Length: 111
Image (cartoon, rainbow, N blue to C red):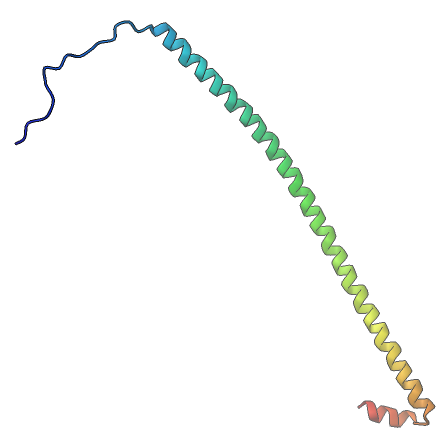
């Protein structure tokens, strides 16, 4: 089996001059800073959620109004088309009657 590299007799340096109070104060300040950022982000998120909810309600209302308007438009177009067909049929009927055809001949042609 191979021997591990490095000396087992290596001297270890122990850093005994650590100021734990300063380290604790630094970490506490860092923690408080992060907590305040999290609180700000949470408040911002709550605000955005309420805005999103309001916008979704507006979108739903607008979609509903659009659907109603489209249905009314389609009904109006269908009615106008029916009126146009009716007027056209009356014009053809008047022309045929003016040309001397009888009502029975016109009905026979239509069938």
